[in-house]
Image (cartoon, rainbow, N blue to C red; front, side):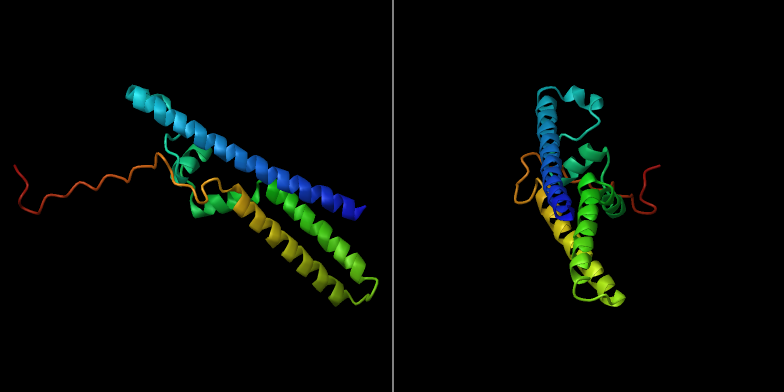
Length: 163
């Protein structure tokens, strides 16, 4: 039964990764539509809270209504449904490995080592699949990138400011 549960967990995980990728592709498509609306009618800008740009920054702003920092990106990753399912899958794989190892040895250190190793390997493998599978911008060239920020206003030199 554990093997069946693990199979269902892994297939669920893979489908969730696909769903998350499709959601991000949809957000990019909506960003492109906003870009088109703003080209047709620039006066609409105050009515949009999401980005009209289809690069990474535009996706982050639309997806979370603000740019992601390194900390919020990591925290967001840890609470996504695929990550939670991957953690359960890794625990199931570890339990299966420990039960199989228990047939050969009952040494607690060996059982714990096998469980920790299998959990870590499975979780890392699923993490890699998720990282690769969710990025809709991998290898893509944005059509409407976010413009660079304007340069800062030059400060007048000391003593040369008009009075």
